[in-house]
Length: 125
Length: 106
Image 1 (spheres, rainbow over the protein chains, first blue to last red):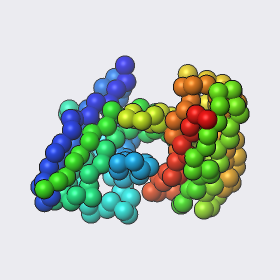
Image 2: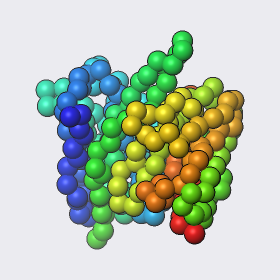
Image 3: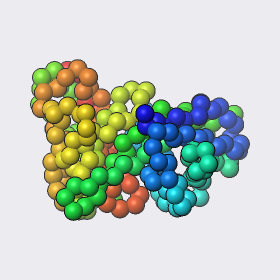
Image 4: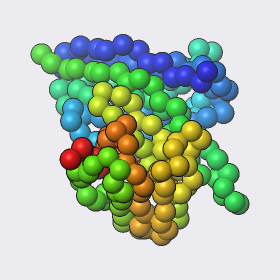
């Protein structure tokens, strides 16, 4: 089965660092982009950024550039999302998702076809 | 690229036909996906390429549109369809989402 399994819930204090993980299995890890999505309590989905494990290329939303770091480790087929100094506004559920790709006619189209279960991060003093 | 969904919420009954609209701030050339999310769960992909149903998704779901305007239609609502629906564009970085449409039972 194709799966993304995320690390468990975290309770941290403002200013602390954190790295959460997303373990992929059941497919070729290096050939699919992996995305991180934020969902603040009671709010919608926000696209944070994406990593291609094959060459570690990353792209960030301007809203999150410089605030987080996205990476991937091919030896453990795991993607990571990390913060160096958390703020209370980072409290949210974070999802990783695989970017699927399909050819329709002459073009390739995309969608996030496999999702992790989410990691809830709470930042509170 | 901004995506604006309408309505933001919708009350409907089992068996109803409902349509959700997603309007982009520019032409996104059908690089649009739709997701369903239930409370406390991760989103699930429903449609990609604006109108292609993902394998395993019931045929009562359909998508259409072109340019900047897209719709998701559920032809006959079932109890399991009550959820929040999001559109997402893949035409430009960052890959933005619409704000969501909450579909509730009337």
